[in-house]
Length: 166
Ligand code: ADP
Image (cartoon, rainbow, N blue to C red):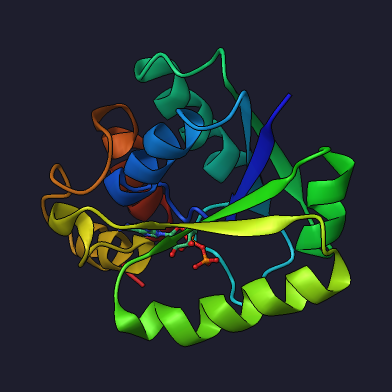
C-alpha cells in the first residue's frame, strides 16, 4: 500500500491546498493530511477548527475513501513513519518557497532515508494563494469565494465575527 503524508498548518485550508490534495491522492493508495499543532506561529483557527474544515472539504469533494486527516506535533519524519508513509507531499508556489522546502526535504531525507519528499507545483490560478491572504481578506469582511471551498466560507466569517478584526 502506497501511503503519503501531506503536512501543513491549513489555517485555513484553501483551494490551493485542495488542488494539491486532489492531485496527490491520485498517486497513492492513502493520503494522510497532517495538521500541525506545534507550529511556532500562532494560528487563528484552532486545531479542532482546522481539522473540521478539512473534513468538510474532503466530504464535499468525495475524497473520503483515500484520505485520512490526523493532527500531529513533533517531527514530521516521526509522524510519517508512524503512518507507514513512503512519501511526504509538499506544494511549491514560487521560488520563495524553494529554499525552505529544499532544506526541509534534505534534512528529512538525512534523518529517514527511505522517506522521500514529492513536490507538486501549484496550478497557475493558485500560485498567489496562501492561508494568510485568506485570513487578511476575511478579517476585513472581503469576498473569499475564489480562495476557499464553499462549505467553509461561513465558518471563516463567523470566526472573525467572534474574535473581531485583528
Ligand atoms: P506551512 O505552514 O507548512 O507553509 P501550509 O498549510 O501553509 O503549511 O501549506 C502546506 C503545504 O501546502 C506547503 O507545502 C505549501 O507550499 C503548500 N501550499 C499552500 N498553498 C498552496 C498553493 N496555493 N498552491 C500549492 N501549494 C500550496
